[in-house]
Image (tube, rainbow, N blue to C red):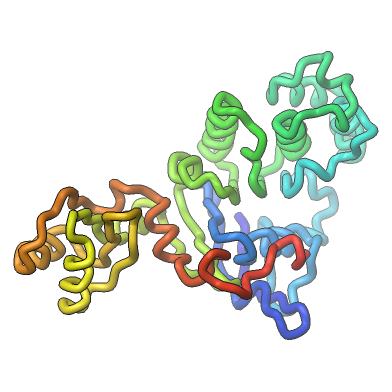
Length: 307
């Protein structure tokens, strides 16, 4: 289990993470979502001891990461696949991890086989790896200690569709066997497919969290019309909040029956009306983070500047 309790991180006058609290439970994949600069990477770095929290606590299996005697046996971490030593081979990197953790030598070959790196690829210098190969090596390094917890930041970067499907199955199987997965990704469809729970962060604060099914169920309704402006005004007059979806659609914070009645009363033709959960995670994400995305604010800060 991962427990983040009232974590805040400030950099001078700027607050990167603001009173963040959530848990990632065993046997479940927790999707950690937010726009660029929202505080995802900073929070994950705090969990694994790479960034110190200004206040609050973050623990893994009841302990601070820095207090774990052999952390690789408890927590598998992949925050930046490009940070691997470019001059070493893939096999050398795994061998170093195996020896450092006191694991049997066979774990190196088992991990290479698990992530489908061939003997020729394993003997190649990491500088010659594609990003997808570096991701596979990073996942192998995270899993080599057979940890109970996985913390992964954008693990699908550089993977082709087949690789993404492979990773999805790997993480789903890991969670189904009782493991805890905290997964950050900008690929919302992949999060939607694999995640059990969601934590959404914007401007350093949690804006929503809970079971994915519950959050999507409460996401409102998607409605499209050839007279979208008239429909928008009718919603305003009825006290229903909404946000744009494409050129001819709205995400309304009301159920479909209420939205349909408003459209009918306004004499507005409706070309589509459905629960937003049918539209998926993207629409919910855009609604929850509307005020914190880089294209809607001038002060959003890149997460790389915060770590």
